[in-house]
Length: 117
Length: 114
Image 1 (cartoon, helix red, strand yellow):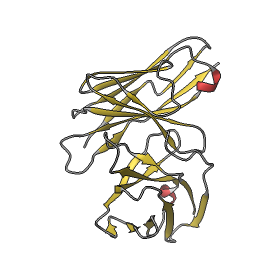
Image 2 (cartoon, rainbow over the protein chains, first blue to last red):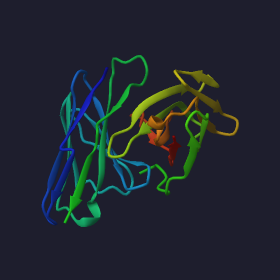
Image 3 (cartoon, rainbow over the protein chains, first blue to last red):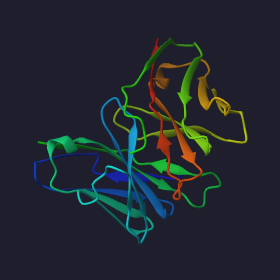
Image 4 (cartoon, rainbow over the protein chains, first blue to last red):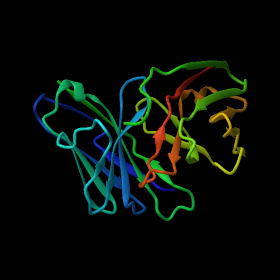
């Protein structure tokens, strides 16, 4: 079945530094990938939709200059948290759409736990 | 974001019982719904889906019911097992979202006691 690999699975960084999270579709092509953020004991909040070769579409309230998204190929999207602060600590999850699936085919990565100290 | 950021309600059941997890969705234009299971520290896993032209769909030990009149979705798990303990989310795809965004509901934590 469709597999999405997300890396790293966890990262600790200092305030003010930037962190890059990768999301790869391993056995399918995904023109669209989605980035979610999840706080403890809460639901997944959609941050942005990433389309291959074009600018990402951000949800209301999500700072595009802080959360840089790049979708350079059909199998890779990256999320960079710039100038990270402790309030950016969260669980970040990506999802990719399998265009060849007869259903909508959303597959999720295993998530990245970001801790900013 | 579009999902609701509330603390998760919890459903506690005994092993072998049937579990029913409910979800209210808000967008009457949604045409596709999915139930996901999320274990601690992991991404969501697909359980079962249903289109808006159906009111019931069955899988292995799971059944999803859709009531479009009251915008309500439920997930029934038969003979619940300890391995079913997780957080369950319903998700919807509103018809009016250009990129077919998946929007998540609040979620319910299922605790299964042996």
